[in-house]
Structure formats: C-alpha cells, structure tokens
Length: 225
Ligand code: DX5
Ligand code: ZN
Image (cartoon, rainbow, N blue to C red; front, side, top):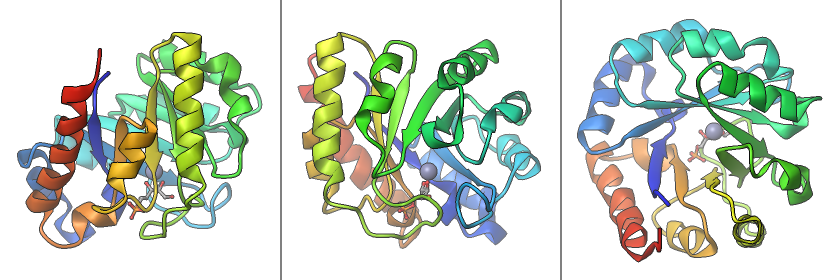
C-alpha cells in the first residue's frame, strides 16, 4: 500500500499558481488534488478544463481530479484531455456508478468514488473491486478551510475493515480539514491517501509538504505490503 499526499490546489494563491505548483512539487509532492465544482452539486464554483490545462503545462505530477459536479459522466473525456490521471466522482452525483467507473477506466485514468460525510459506506460495497480509490469527505464538500468532522474517523476504520475483508486493493483518500494535528489519527484509522489544502498553502509550502510527507513515510515503513 502506498502512502500519498495530494495537496489541494483550491487553496493556491491563483495569482502565483505556476510558482506555487512548482514549489509544491519541488518539496516532494507527487500528486496534486484538483477540485472541480459546478455550483449545483456543491454551492460554490471553482474552475474547469481550461484552468486545469494551464496547471498541466507547468506540472508533471499525478493529477488527482475530484469532480464535485452533477452527472460527471458528461465530462470524463474532457478532463482526461485536460490532463487528468485519476478522476473521482461522487456516488451522490451519479446514477449508474458502475458504468461511470468503467468509463473512467476506459479513458485510461484511475477511478475513485467520493462519499459525502453522511453517505453510508454500503454505497461502495460492490464497487471495492473495481474502484482504485474511495474518497471519504471529512467536511461537506464545497469549500476549503473547513473543520474536520470527527465521526469520519470511525468511517475510515470501517472502510479499511471492509477493504481487508474483501481482500482487494483500494486506496482510502481523506479530504477536508486535515491538519498537522489530526493527520496521525486519520492514518491510524487506515487512510493511506491524504488531501490537504489550507494546511499546505497557509504558511511555508515546502515546510508543510515535508511535515505531511514525514507522517506518511512513517506509516509507509509500517505498511505490510
Ligand atoms: C472541499 C474540497 C477539498 C478542499 C480541502 O470541498 O474537496 O479538497 O480543498 O481543503 P482543506 O484541506 O483546506 O479542508
Ligand atoms: Zn477535494
């Protein structure tokens, strides 16, 4: 199992996007988390394909695209063309989840399923074999800089138990309100892929990336696989 940090570009200073993306990668981040919002599935609107393409022009990192949009199946190929390496869709925004995951794989991307905090884990029971990752939202999606919802820790634990019992390879990504204090209990609970926005881009980017990567590599060393 690989332990990975995925800094969320939503917290970038967009006037300095290219420079801050380079700093993030130089500090050792291998993934970048790209939050796309449509103003319908979530209250806010962030950015779409053209902005992502401009990120792609300055970065070779793995682009971990989190689609917070209704009927994301309409845009899978467009996001692939804009540079996505992985695409995560919300179970709540999709009618035919199995088909959409297949569509993401057919586009040549890793496929993730995101669940809002209150959405039960049973939603993904039959998809654990097909999905590469389950993203557990630890805030209500729509904005950076919110507070981690404590009951999600138990949800991470239960999902790790489900994945072990099913004997499949599926990453657990946790997104929302992750900081230097709570990352340890999130990793303890069984997450292996961490999104952090404000905790990376507030203050010194390199120092923040080093801190999170330090925590992740400590868990990597303990990992059996
Ligand atoms: C929230 C987004 C998150 C957000 C995380 O809707 O999906 O990726 O940018 O930001 P922080 O780490 O500040 O909660
Ligand atoms: Zn996100």
